[in-house]
Image (cartoon, rainbow, N blue to C red; front, top):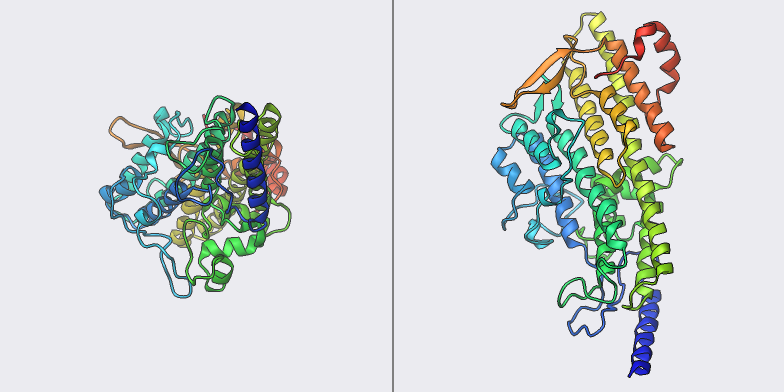
Length: 462
């Protein structure tokens, strides 16, 4: 019987390898069922529709926050799991039709709040948890246009960029690609759940891939094509529509947040974040499939963890690149505001752009702190340099939130000092994360600006 079992196991492994080799090259799809004794009708084991649904919930929540929807409606997309939620974004547009129109068509009973990082967010007042921070922002965004120019907050940007870390990045690198890869967690010789067509390791890996938000066929596309899919440019339809049905399937053919930013940086030709991450996911999935439904050996898990480490490293760099980019944007915005203010001109448009970019900077800086590793001193420096709120035109800055949720302001650094803080943020991303794309690189100004400001320029927000 033992000999017969070994023969059967070998047959499953050979079948898995054969079917995997027959799957379309470079596409995260078509991996066979390797669960022993599976009696269902599934012919492949790839499943990450829950993650696709949450990516859609994120895009929809961002859109709602940007137009100041009611708190009740926004919370239905953040905390709620009820049926009937329409897809607000990405929705069909001329030349770029979307297959699904409701979240339930992708996956039902899903929310974002349950998958948001539960640790304390030290870069925001009162050390709230991740879900508490998002809920606070939703409450502030409700009923207006999603932007608070008095205090300097663009809530759509804060919510969106933070969730890309607190949900997508955290769930992937600090869960599915971390403890779930241990021998006693989600074993590969058992289904993920009763009756499932995928093993514990297969589904854990797939779910992490889903949170990255890349089209399943991203390896066969250029970064520019993947980027344009997210923008829903009509000319990108052919690249997105992998199965040729004339519509974009949000489960497998769309580009979402993390992959969009990776592709955006790669377009410049200096980095390969997109294909590096997706390639590592593909190689890891092939390894798991090749095990044929058997427990992974220590050697196999070591190799799988190496792929996971690649994903973690590159993904963290994508977030750090975003922090670098928007620190440069904020620096340039402040320079424009200074010129306008010196000329006693109208600052409304320039200040609005500045607040938007600061929200993106702040959101991504908090997102970067939700990964597997505690950033320690790097996080402290980043939080102090950026502050709880942006430098405001009256040289004030939000420094706290009281027990009633009201913002409290204090004296901000001088404009020039805050500009120098942005350059220090860029240098920090280079020194600690080795960012290479370096969009909006303004570091060449550090020496001259510090010289203009004198010895007091090194002060950071406490």
